[in-house]
Each structure stands twice: as structure tokens, then as C-alpha cells.
Length: 260
Image (cartoon, rainbow, N blue to C red; front, side, top):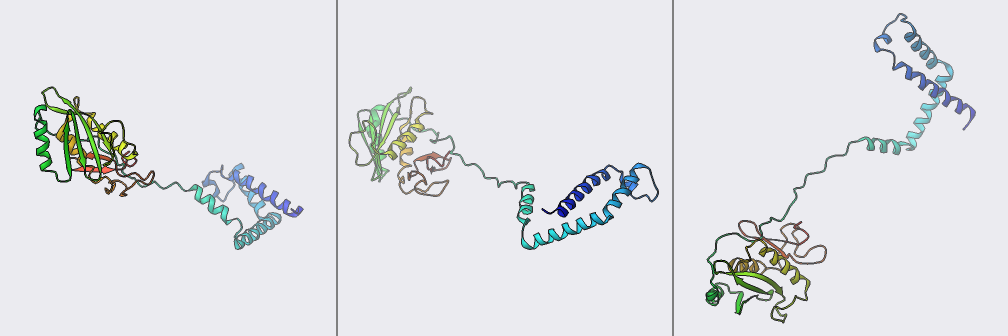
């Protein structure tokens, strides 16, 4: 930096300081032609400084430097960045949060099935369901969905003597074990958890017809598209839609991660 440039910068800084004094003078006084005391004297002195040869030379030099910087693009990035920072952030678009309803099973009256009539009820049920078969062995109901999964339901007797489902587990269609233990496949373990959630709201269990309807909702387990993201398998984990809930009209489905 040359001595002359340094002097010009100091002159402009001093002028900037004195201009700050003008802001303290009432605007009405600046329009008066006659002297009004110290305030007008301050304005007059600043005007003389601005019109002086050294300050005019410094202002001229500053303008030339600014024009050169503007032509070469130097400094414009900083000004643009400053303008960007002063802008208020635009509000984000509101996205409606999608949540899985808490009603997992349809709560509607169903005919009670006495324990002694369970076998006859299962045979009648099989006649109306071509792709699913129900078998009874003691107090275990085996419900098989062809090529999808096999579900074992442990049943008990409710207060009125009706059959209620107390436990439920899902397995692969070709897994053995007779419903004992847990499935070795993660997807069926997750389905077991989802089916178990449906029993939590019942008084010691749910009616056999209601739970069987919940199981049938998984007939399209490996082809059902998620009602939230639209994918068949989840983006993370590559798991099918293992969540089912009753939306008041039909069974809806989603991935375990999409229903949060």
C-alpha cells in the first residue's frame, strides 16, 4: 500500500466519521438557508470537507477502483453472499404427517364360537376360503395361507364360554416344528409381533373370526405395495409390508418403518 493510498483511506474514514454527526441533526434544519447555530455549522464544515481537493481525489480514486473490481468480478461474490445471508429463509412446505391408525383390528360383533363347536366352525370356515385352510389340534388352531405362511393360534375360553385367541405365531409355509418356538426367518418373526399387537386390545384375547381375518390380510405379504412409500419392499432392510391395520373399510398395509 502506497503512502498516497493510505492517506486517501484515512481521509475517507475521517469523512465517514463526520458524516455520522449529520444523522444527529434534525432534517428540517438541513433545509434552512439561514444559520441556526452549532448544528448548521457542523453541516457546513462537512460540506467544505467533502468539496476539498484531497477528499475529492480520494473519492475519485475509490470509484475507479470499484469500477475495476466490478469489471473483473472481484468482490461481487462477497456482495452476493451477503445479500443471500440477509434473506429470510423461505418457509418449508407443510407435509402432512402420516401415521398408522391405532385400530389394528375391526371391533365389530361376531358370533361367539363355543369350544365344543370349534371343529364344525373351522370346517364351515374352510368352505368359504379357497386359498386358506384351518386345522384344529387340541387348543391349537393352524391356519395356512398357501405359499405365504402358516400361523399357529393358541386358543382359550372367554368369560361367556366362547373361543378366544390368546397367542399367535407365524412361520414359513414349509417350516416344521408344529408351531413351537420361533420362525428362523426375520420376516415371519416381525409378522408374529404385528399379529400379537392385535391381541393386546382384547379382554384376554380376541374372537377367532376377527383374528383369522387379520391373518388373511397377509395373503399378499410379498406383493403388497406400501400405502405410504408405494414400494413392495422397504428401502432399508428390503423387508415387505409387514404392518396391517383396519382403516374402517378394509385392510391397509405399510412397512414397519413407514408407519411411524
